[in-house]
Image 1 (cartoon, one colour):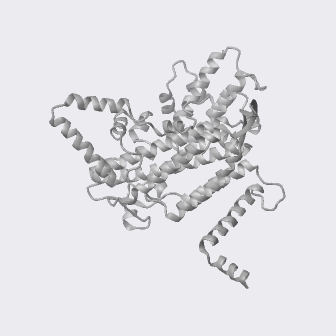
Image 2 (cartoon, helix red, strand yellow):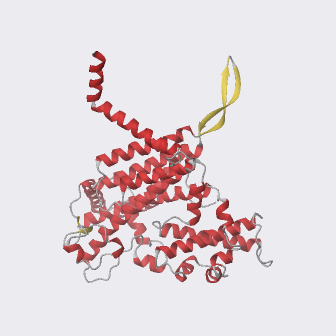
Image 3 (cartoon, helix red, strand yellow):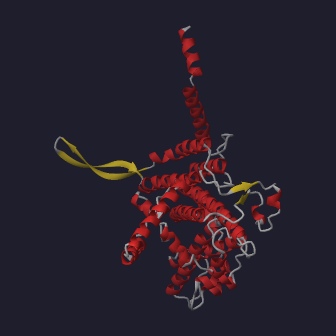
Length: 469
């Protein structure tokens, strides 16, 4: 009888019920990973690395979805994300390497080998968790704002908006006051965009570095053309091998009007880079280059191709993965690489979506303030930047510097207080006739600009893949 009562008490305890439910869910998740997503048990499943990568990707898709508007995540979704992502990445605690260590036994010092978490995992997992938290904080910052709202896609006002991009028809339309947002809210929105942009750059850099660490599968190599010219085509090959090469002019000559064409160009260039590298290291048994092509020329062409790939990566962060990246992920056998790549990739995708939603609101604000202007929203860069094929101009960089001393997480009310303090300090300095001190302070702010998120990752022990090897 006493045992029956204790069992009944356990059934009624909500905390224990939640623990048991989590345990069952963990069993289900890890059973699928062990079976390689083949629930029949027939041994036809994928590798453990790919199964774990898919699990992280699917979790992010189910928790975050499209992120249709700027608002904090629900407490349940946030709790689920924190709990289940910790389950999936906890396997990296057991990915170790042998390192030398000294042991003292009875006054005798001996050198032995001990296990320690693998260096790339030990450095990058805390960094990824850090930028994950920064991104969640950025979404939380939109809790108190009330100047812009959203109307559903079925609303008559949404249907009447002729300026709305057709490829985003399923998203709710931002609505701002008739005269646009206030100056303070507009500056705060720019600050939030800059903060998310730093997170995006950090995630992109880490993902690109991890992908370069993965081996190129033999199946991809076997499918390559016999030389770089065959991969690129005559037109692209001539543009990339001219005497005086300008990457901006090269991209202006390319048709980048759609996502498919951008991805096709990236696939061709990546294939040519692999071919050229293999020929330079004598790993390619296929027909070689012409005898008139020197080693210096081959290295020069490869460097140009790498430059173009880097520009495409930063200018179009939302495009799907290239054929080379997909092949690496599908054939990867390293569980540590799988976790780092998938985690950084979903954070990159999430940051890009938040950036796009911020730009939606900014575009609507521009239309409200300039109803007669010919303003076209660009999901990644300003239309002028893309048309000229250049990166953000100096004025955009100065705007970033203006808010460089602000905290990393700032709600609209926090931003108002910070702005008032900055203005009060400037007025006091000017009223004292200390224009020189003010100028020196601004110059100091530029020279000692706040560390970017990538630089912060370095302080956390993360690896900063600023260049491709």
